Length: 573
Ligand code: CA
Image 1: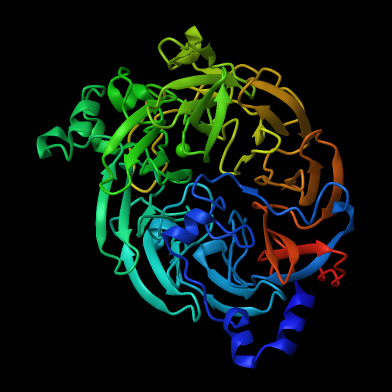
Image 2: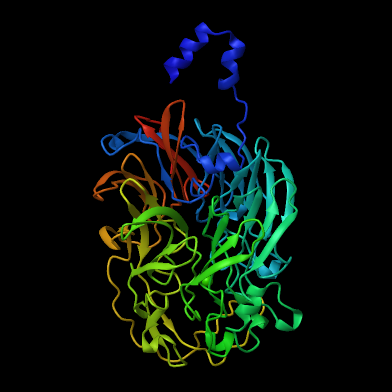
C-alpha cells in the first residue's frame, strides 16, 4: 500500500493525490456502520450483528508471536476498572474510562487528541451523585456522523464533536437524583442513538430510549416491565406483561434494566436488547412469590423505528436470583439441522447458552455452559428451564450456582464464522439465597429482599478453576475446548480471520489462541483488569488494542496497542 501511494505521488498532480489520501473525514452513516469496513472498528461489536469478529488477517496464527507494543497511552483521570471497547475511525481511536471520561487518541501513535471529563458527582446518593451497584465503569462510546456518543454514569447521554470533543448536545435519560445510572455503550440504529440504564439493585423500572443522533430529540422509549396499572399502560405489551405480576410490584420499580447487550438486524429492522433481573431480587417481595414477571431476564426484539416489542423470549421466568439476560447478543446466519437459520445467540447469567431464531424468537437450543445447580435443563417444548425443587428459596435459604455474578457477565463472547465457534468467557460462582423476612426498602440502598441473619450451611464445592474461555459450536451444541483461568474477572474476547482469538485474564495477561484448537500462541503481561480487544488497520498495518488497568503512576488505566514487529518501550509501572 505504501509503495503504491508513493508511485501515485510521482505520477499524478498533487491535488489528485491529496483527495483520497487527505485527512478528510469519512462519514460514519447507517451504510458505513452496516458495511463495517474491517480496517476500522466503527461500532461496539464491530458490526451491527455484534460478532466481535474481524476479517483482518495480517496477524495470523503463524506470525502472532511477533506481536510487540506499538504504543500505549495512560488515561490518567481516575482509578478503577476499565470495561470499554474502544472504536476506530479515520485514524482516531475513541474510548471511555472510569467516571465516564471520553477520549480520542491518534490510532497510529497514541498521541492524545482530546479528553472530556463530565465531572460526575462522586460519593453516591449522600452527595447527590448517582447510586452505582458495580463500580463507575463505562463500556464504550458510539460513533455517528461526526459525533461521539457516550452514556454517563449520572444518566446523561452526550454527543461530542468527534474532532474537538466539544459538547454538541446532552440529554438526561433518567430521573435526576434517582437510583438509575448508565454504564453501557450507546448503539446506533437508523439514525437514532439507543441507550438503556442500570439500577435494579436499588429498585427501578427498566427501559430503553432512542434519541435522534443529530438533535438529541427523543424518538421512542420502551419500558421492559409494567408500571402501576392505575396510571395506564404505555402499550399493549405492558398490559400483557402486567398479567404476570402480583401485588404492588411498581413500588420498587420491578427491575428489568437494560445495561449492556444489544444488536441490530437492518434487514429485519429488528433491534435486540437483553433485560436484567427483578427488583427486588426476591420474587416473594416483588410479586407475592408468583408469576413470570415479564419481561424480566428476557431477550426482546424491538421494531427499530418505533421501539415496539415484536417478540420476547424469557430466559429466566420469575427471576429470583439476579439472573440478568443483558449479556452480549450476537447475530449470525448458520445452518442448523441442514436448514439456514438467522439466529441470535446469548449466554446470560443463568448458565445456559441460547440459540434463537432472531426473526420469530423460536428457541432452537439451550445448553448449560457453566456450573448450573438451579435448574436441570431447558425444556425445548415449553422453552422454560426445569428448576430444581429448592431453587425457589425461602427464609431457610439454599446455595445455588450461578450466583449473582453469573456464569457469564459483561465481558463479551465473540463469534468466528470461519471456525463456526463462539468464544465465551465464563466463570463458576455460587450464592446463598435466602428470603429476608425483615426486608424494609431503604432509598439509596440495595433493596434485594434477600439475606438476613441466621446460620448458613457450608457452601458446596465449586468446580476449579474459577474462570474459563470455552469454544462452543452453536450448530452441534458441543463445547470443543476450554482454556482454564485461575481468576473469574477476565476480559472479553475478539476473534479474527487470522484464525485467532484474543482475550486477557483478570491478572492482565493478554493472549492469543489458535481459534481452531485453542493452543496458546502468544501472551504478554499488561495490567490487571482488562476490557475487550479490538483490531484495525492503518497504512496497511494491522493493530490490536485493549484497555487494561490500573496502570501507570495514576493507577488510571492504559490503552495498549500492538502490531507485528513493533518494539515501543514498555511504559513504567
Ligand atoms: Ca443485577
